[in-house]
Length: 331
Image (cartoon, rainbow, N blue to C red; front, side):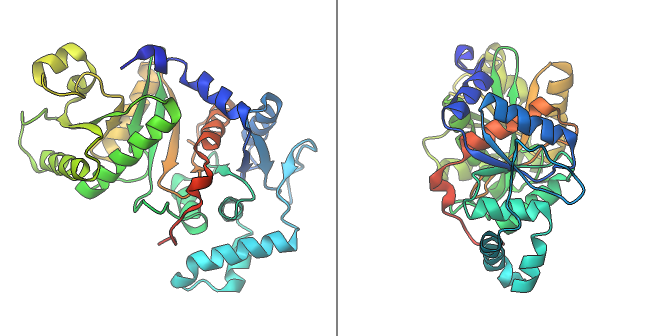
């Protein structure tokens, strides 16, 4: 891994966002941290914040407020939500009523292109944010799974951890999709070629167990789908990250000792790992960053800081792409 390329990734992302500020919506305006973050983002010109108004919160006059009283705009949002969910029995009247939920309103506004992305989760649970994203935005055309990753900024390098927030116990197919999507996310954000490690308690046959077999199967699936992707598994973390350990345990691997995308076998291990990295190693954990949706609909940790909200908004801006408007009907 080239540390000189990754050490300043947040600075680079902020500069990229400022060069072309996108419209990012914030539905949780009852949280003072969100209002403070929106004002900072506007002052720094990283994104153009749009906030969702609520009846009991007086919003600063210098912030753009989503025009929920615009009948034409609300009709477009309701129609999109109806189209997305009518196969589940949602009526047009129920779709209009559903827009009273700030999360669903934000998702519909993202879906119709009124804004480029959304950031929520400082109050709402991850499950609520993901549900709104699925209902309102839908999955990307080439994706079957919504997952998440953390961009882990250490003092001298940057890693991607996945999945740490959404899929509790992925099977081999799901683990493969998490690996592929996370590799793409890592490259889009850092510009660095992804080297993906499918992590395990075993390294290349050092142990046999059904859990290890799942990792091997995920590797086979991924190599068949993405033969050019640099990926290895199963690897213990030290073999994936430490060059001299990799030289002993996996000397022929092009990934071992150089991995920058760490794919964990389940949500337990991923969630524990990112919190240990954050609290003991001093890493800045950005996320959980939702991937697999047609457009950015980002989640936050409920313990997030104002700066965390700003940086996730920057990432949502970078990941917004006109090509991502291709979407599937949500399931």
